[in-house]
Image (cartoon, rainbow, N blue to C red; front, top):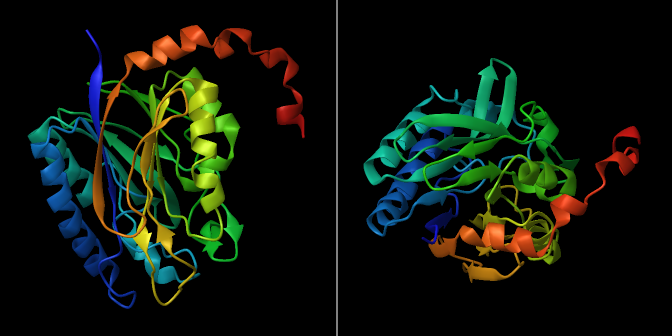
Length: 288
């Protein structure tokens, strides 16, 4: 029997002016997302993911400690708890990308993974943290320390890679070696910078590792930073590098795509990259 899975991706523009409090941002974004989560549930979505730090704006063009107020504990914070309720309600795996407070003053860019019965399975912390103009992420995020976990969900094995991570093939390979069948990549990226890579890198990861990739990007512009247009274009790509479904560039959207996870085995049996790799020859990767 085919392992058919319905994937849902939510891309969205910010819903509150920057001067609003962190709590006002969180409430506005959650309210906007709930409508799409309900729609996804009613349409039978099995796995759902939102964009990077989805409960607020992409605040990293600033170096303003105000945004530490968006942090939440995982799994005991309010957003994770709320998403557990919706996962259970709709029998839906939900990947929840939020700003995590580990302890006071130690914060991570994180995604919680919740199974279809509402059980919290664990989290991925973004490993690669950029520090360039418009993306001062080291001010806000400590580099991840949980490796590249893969979560065995009711519908398949889920990995997570967050935004800037996608530029690094090493972690993408680790997710495949750890058993990922689909990797979700919640992002916040603007036109004029990385757009030429958007439909290149992630299909390449899918091909090199024989898994599906679901890429999510926010939309719109965000004042007062105005670093460019978040160009949406969320998509799902199969293990052969074919983009199966593509969202718009400029509007809030729930993108729903049907996939067959049996294609992972079929593709890996065709291209034996895991059999033929030579890890004993790759020492330079960790020595330089």
